[in-house]
Amino acid sequence: MARPDKAAAVAEIADKFRSSNAAVLTEYRGLTVKQVKTLRRSLGENAQYAVVKNTLTKIAANEAGITELDDQFTGPTAVAFVTGDPVESAKALRDFAKENPALIIKGGVLDGKALSADDIKKLADLESREVLLAKLAGGLKASMAKAAATFQAPLVEFARTAEALRAKVEQGGAGTPAPAEAEDTTEAAE
Image (cartoon, rainbow, N blue to C red; front, side):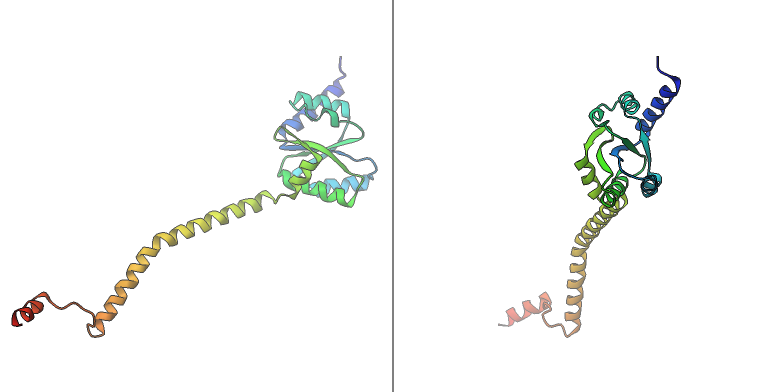
């Protein structure tokens, strides 16, 4: 029978896996306590970085329905449980790993799908959610403006043609058609 403290730890970690958008497994061997604190601060409120026991975390991940990470629970492991934007957290981990080579990104899970270390690096190269949404909104706005200009073009062309015709008539009637009666009388006279 499992000890109550271990069962509680497994339940807590399983809840973190379930409530997180993503989880990134790292190896922290060689990092100082000060460096780990710096990493936690760089992750901000987006993620919670926790040093975990492999056996308990493996059991908790399996309880949460995540079995793809089983082979990554080796060596000293810490997990970044991401509740905010996964891209921002991946960038923070990547940037910290560049400055501190002792931090090794093992892999992770995003929305229930397993990610390799390379996948997490690719995720870190993406722009943030806000930037992508702004670009989408800008593209949609440009499309709408282009459509409005296309629909407005025939009306503008008609107005220009009507104005040119009015100006021509005011300049002395050059090019204005003669009344029909005048044509008939000239034909009869000849």
